[in-house]
Image (cartoon, rainbow, N blue to C red; front, side, top):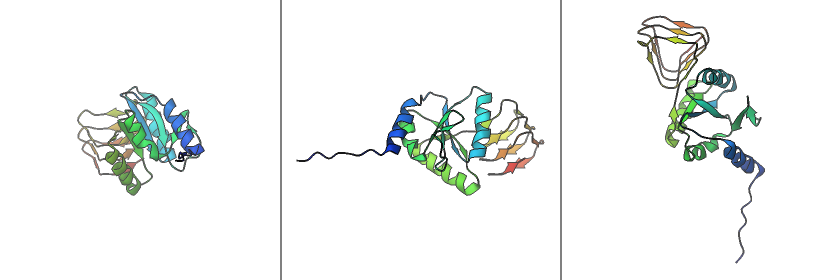
Length: 171
């Protein structure tokens, strides 16, 4: 009998090498999606110690690194989950993309988390949804509601009792 040889593409080999370099801990997160929003999310995560970004996933991103973090293809999510990854931050360019990303990540068993900058002032009486972005110098007042997967960009103020729905962006 002939032995079958499995050929490994150079891309598959690079992915495996990248995965070997990623050290997953209890607070590891991967940023998934659009480049500009990913940069803002990275800034949020760097500004505090809640989560450590270990990878950036965007199938159209052509570089091997994103600000010093391994740039990966979404096909690695199951492997990252098997290695202990629990969290992902989504930054799709529109509600349709974010919805598909959320479904994909939930199917794999990853939890969608929020990115909140350390300089933001958020009332303890505000209600924050899943997977939101709160940028630098944002103020969110008491009784305000920020819906799932919404974004409050740098310097914006959401007054008391204001209600933002799902997928809303405020600048």
